Amino acid sequence: MKKILIDECLPRKFKTYFSAYDCVTVPEAGWAGKKNGELLSLAESAGFQVFVSLDAGIQYEQNLTGRRIAIILIAAVSSRLQDLLLHVQSVLATLESIEAGQLVRIP
Image (cartoon, rainbow, N blue to C red):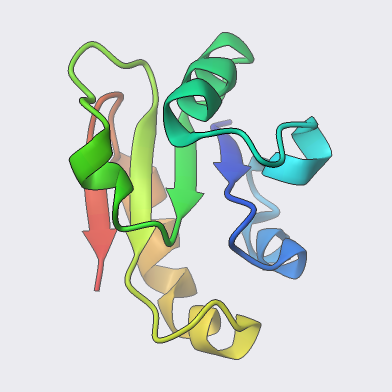
């Protein structure tokens, strides 16, 4: 079972749509306010395999070469749950195949 970290920019309820996975939000992990680089390192150390975010800047800020974590970026209209629900099936499909060090953008 993949261990998934949900970014704090996403609503906490969003994780309920990924109940087949071990899913934790950044605030639940105690890492609220951490910068992306530190957050990814903490997540890797804690055994997370996938980080889900809306923060498109992460793809330009972070070099994923050698990382043990993958990133799924959701390109939603907003961070409102109703806008994110349109992307749940695509995220679930991506979770099945994503590999460490990959960044997948969900349009």
